[in-house]
Amino acid sequence: MPLDKNCKDVPYLLGRMAAIIERSVELTPHQQNQAQEMPYIIFPTMIAKYHEAGSPLRSSELSELICLLPSDRPFPDRLALPEQGQFIIGHDHELADIFREQNRRKVAKAVKLKRVELDLTQEQLAEKAGITTQTVGNIESGNCNVSLDVLSSVMAVLGIKMAIE
Image (cartoon, rainbow, N blue to C red; front, side, top):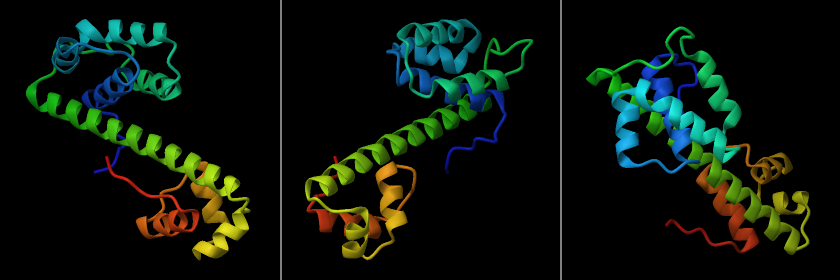
């Protein structure tokens, strides 16, 4: 299931926030458990550490998530077991989205560097790969979700090998 940016449930939002913060700030397993079980205790500290680190990773998204929390009591004292489940789902959805974004950027960079190295225009690459110039531009910008078949075709033309680690 993909990230639900429309979900306003506090546990889901807190899970998303925890994922963003933990990608920028090292948290102990104890702190991670506290975030899930007792957000009131640990979230202010986590957010302060995030800002101290000066991390740009999804900072505007984190700010938006904070604004969606209830202003009178943004961090509940405890999360009941079903709410902890929502927290974990929000956390996992956000992490998956972060990894997808990072992978798209890596692919975009590799494709563009290799295309330039081979002295190909986007039009030439598109023609050789059997795709549109717009698709090549989208791949190189990292802003699209192309099929594995399209990506394989582009990478074959460029002589790039795909590896799954």
